[in-house]
Length: 64
Image 1 (cartoon, rainbow, N blue to C red):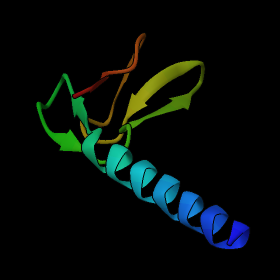
Image 2 (cartoon, rainbow, N blue to C red):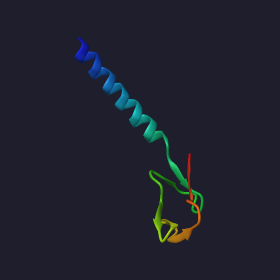
Image 3 (spheres, rainbow, N blue to C red):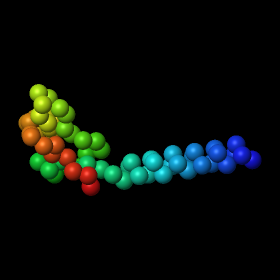
């Protein structure tokens, strides 16, 4: 019984984490495109946007 409850709790936590992660999307301020993950990478101490192929002082991704 205890194993079953623990298993159900783990499955519920996994489902909640998956739904929460899928609901959060990023939007690139420069292009307006919605992306699944941030389009910025660190290059030379600046943020490099893979969509615009430009560097910025701040990340151009916002949570939606």
